[in-house]
Length: 177
Image (tube, rainbow, N blue to C red):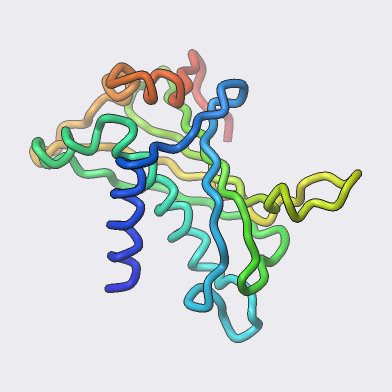
């Protein structure tokens, strides 16, 4: 737990010092990671529980850039993961580089944040003429709440700064399950 806490702090600091780059076309952020020896299981590939931790770290990296970090600290706002779905497609080997592509949708209910994290093959590791492999996909539904239990409307996050306006995608219809 101590190591994960240190990783979270590292990503918060790096998110503040070097905000993630937003791909304007897909409204997504890519974060390059490597499967460390602490992330592997007895089969020498990334443990299935680590995928959720890495998805969380990618959100921590974006948190300061979104402008909601200071607000969350001052107002004691809690980010609560409500539902997660993981699809494991191919294993990530020990020490292998990969990219986590993160997108976030806000729908008309203005209550939930819908994240999608795609674990992709690092572009430098894709052989010429081949397509980038997808290792896993994590879908997460989250809500932000004040200590009183009142929900923070995601639309207020979308107007926080340029990063938020570029990253969060607003949709008029509810996500299809």
